[in-house]
Length: 53
Image (cartoon, rainbow, N blue to C red):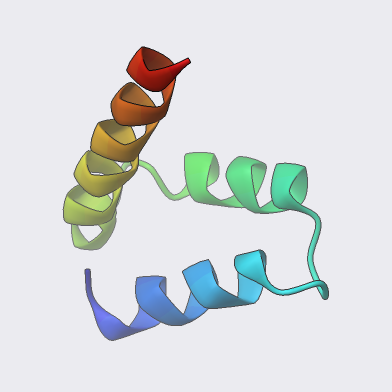
């Protein structure tokens, strides 16, 4: 995870931003190669949560 996406991620976790807004924002940036690793991590976390439930 690079520094920019990491900062955005922590901003999204804070109370200043709604999570749905951040999801839409990251989806619009999905095509950029800088966030590919971040998306891979998100997908892994999502799969873990989905399997736990």
